[in-house]
Image 1 (tube, helix red, strand yellow):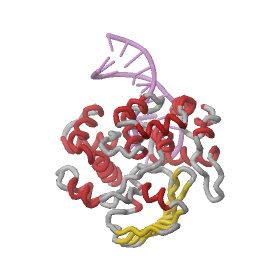
Image 2 (tube, protein in one colour; image 1 turned 120 degrees about the vertical axis):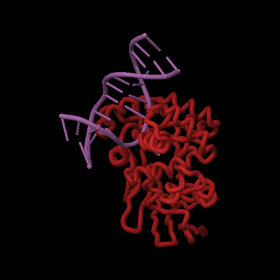
Image 3 (cartoon, chains in turn green, purple, blue; image 1 turned 180 degrees about the vertical axis):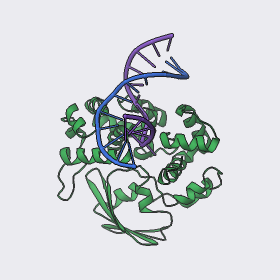
Image 4 (cartoon, helix red, strand yellow; image 1 turned 90 degrees about the vertical axis):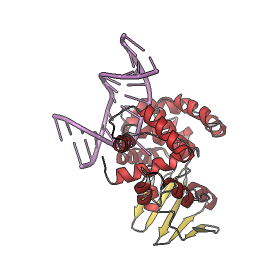
Length: 277
DNA sequence: GCCCAGGGATGCG
DNA sequence: CGCATCCATGGG
């Protein structure tokens, strides 16, 4: 994969390790619009427009450096896939989602987004986040920014219910009132265990959501979030019928180690996209 | 009407 | 600790 960085554009050629649709549809990001061979992706108050064909991707943005990091463009996914394809459980999933990249999104936006994600489905998650942006985020002209923590602190429990958060409304209210910008900044500097511990102290954040926040918002790759799909994957592959997510998390993290986050995304996308049981 | 969705909080033993 | 139960809401 070759990447050329210009002032307001990234041009990726030989793009076999980056499939935009796969990357957007593997449940790590909720603010994007796809239209044919183009897409617009939003993060914080920024956006990027992506255009692609069979072996080239263009990323048009005013913040080239942000979206270079956002799409994890300095990582060699070919090498990661070579390692993971040797795993008998993973081979077909890696081949199926061979263009997935793990996004480096804004930690605060990911915390809020994944509190909403708990026991929810992706379409409803997207709708709720879009509601929060359009009602409480800054109007950027053609779109709305993700609401800042300061902006969300003015939002009531009833407002969250109107956004479709259901019983997560009170958890969200509590976490937003508790959280500070300083918390977010110091979180980025903590080690993995300290990050996990802090995240679990937030209302609406349990083990799975904390792992997602670390994977998609803090750049921690040796975590393996276990949701209902991964639970199905595990039972299918091991011919078991457990619901012990702690056990599944430990076994899969031990198995895939530093590549756990990547393995998890290949599994999730393959099984969910094919609606495999 | 039933089941499910990128689960977490709570209470009880 | 582990375990069961409850929790809004919309789509299939």
